[in-house]
Structure formats: C-alpha cells, structure tokens
Length: 143
Image (cartoon, rainbow, N blue to C red; front, side, top):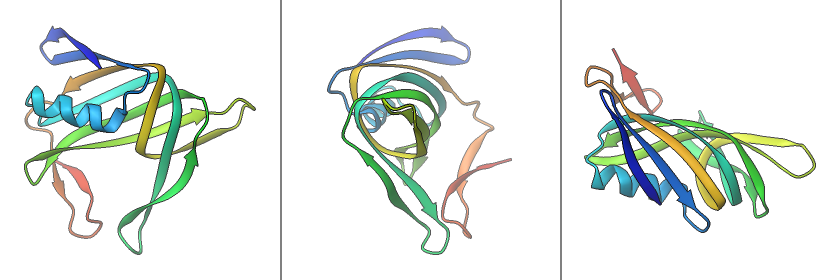
C-alpha cells in the first residue's frame, strides 16, 4: 500500500492498495502509523476475494454472509476508522459485483486486492467521536 497526504485541512490522504494487499489490515496499519483516531473513507477498485458479514442483533455479533474467492469489482466501499480500547478499528460497508452482474453487500470483514484499490481517507473533526452504545455494543457517533 502506498499513500500520499493530499490536503492538510481537513487532513486527507489518498491510499493506493496493490494486488495482494489486504484492505482491513492495511487500513488499520496505516491508522497506527499516521496516528489516525477518527476518519471516514470511500474506495473503488477490484478484489480477488472478499468476506462480508451482517450484524446479528440478537447476539450482537457480525456473522459471515458472503465469502467469495473470485475476481469481483469493488463497486463501493464506505466506512470509518475509530479507536476502540486505544486501537484503530475499521468499519466498512461494501458492495461488490460479480462477473454475472449480481451484486453482494455487507459489512467488510476481509478483502484481498487485485489489481488495485483507490481509497480517499479524511480525518474526522475532533467533536465527532464515536462511543460504544450499551444496547447494541457498536461504536456509534456521539453528538
């Protein structure tokens, strides 16, 4: 993964993932290296595999819904990075398109890039922070 700071206010980065890079781990590593505590991101590209999940309200856990080990288009990825217990956590929602034109969407668990993924990440203003919601167990924006 390569990245470049493209704006200072708000701090905005372009991140380019290459074939074989894992998106979630790469984003978490980037957040640690750049001391990113809160941000939002969008991305497009293509993947050689992806695992998606859905949030089970009863168990308060993410459950795998789709596990594709094939070339897919990354049609849309939106999400954020927040700190949980002092560590950055990536929360992304994704839509991928298969060769037959069908689409699958959900919570991003894992994705291997092929050939590229172009991601724009913008730091969130300090007054927009997330806190763990006791009812759901999810990190939600606290106003």
